[in-house]
Length: 169
Image 1 (cartoon, rainbow, N blue to C red):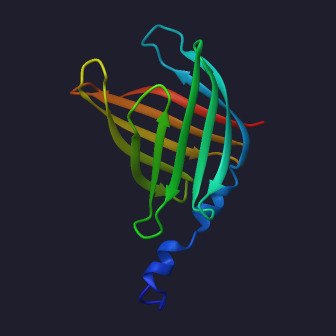
Image 2 (cartoon, rainbow, N blue to C red):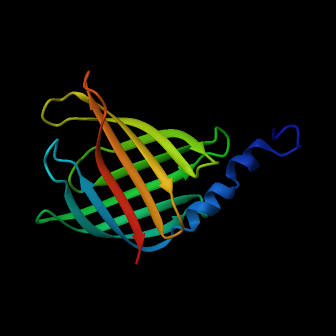
């Protein structure tokens, strides 16, 4: 496409798009509600933590920073969300003070529905088994962002484990 329009590929790669503009609408102060599944028949655990969002690196990435209390422990996390203009894929990384690993997810952007379905993996610290992770990011309205997280360990069936709902304060 770039060659057809005489656009230098590196210029295209470096230039933010409408997806980056959309991500920029989610800057500001939010409340992140974490709803964690505890298994069938059990009520979920719901935790609220403040989340501050900024566009970084020349408006190319959305950074979401959380800091608060999770079940009596100090909690901090940093998520970054980006969109690659060349392969048209979204990427998200998550790091927290409750782990030493990095969750990195990659997947397709669905322009029509303003959502992305991302895939990655992490290691279960107890079993040392690989956990396949799928997260669906829904850009609802400019005051609400929802991330649904699904896990499958080994040959287990995928199950929804966490929903992160970000609501503008």
